Length: 134
Image (cartoon, rainbow, N blue to C red; front, top):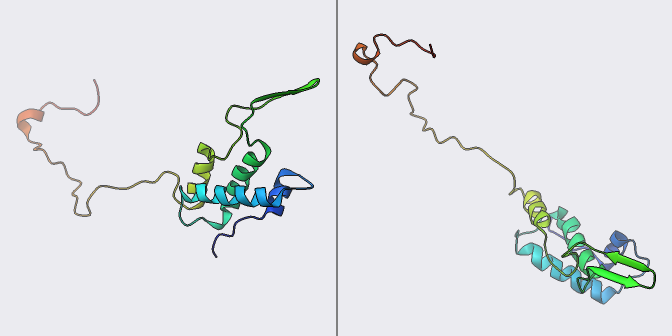
C-alpha cells in the first residue's frame, strides 16, 4: 500500500482545533511530505504521524516565536519550536519506520576460516608456559 498524505481535517484533529484553515493546512502538509521524502523514499504508510507532527508544529507557530506576552499572560516556547523543519527525532522515526534504522551485526569471518592457531606452538618458546596469570 502506498503512502497517503494526511488531510487538513486530520491535522485539525491532531492539533485539537475545531476549525482549521484548509488551504494553509494542505500547503503545510505538502511541504512536510516533501521534507520527509528528502530523508526516506518511498514514505512508509506509518509516516503519517511524522508528517502531522511537522505540519502541526508549523501550523501553530509559523513565525518561530519563542517568547510571547499578551496582557498578563506570557508563554515561552522551546528554541526552534516553529516553522517547517524535521527534528533529529523526526528523521530517526522516518528511517526506523522504513526499516533503515537501528544496529546490526555482520560477521566478517570467511566461511573457510580455520579455528586452529596460526602461529607455531612448539616447545622452543613455550616450554614453561602456563595459562593464566601467576
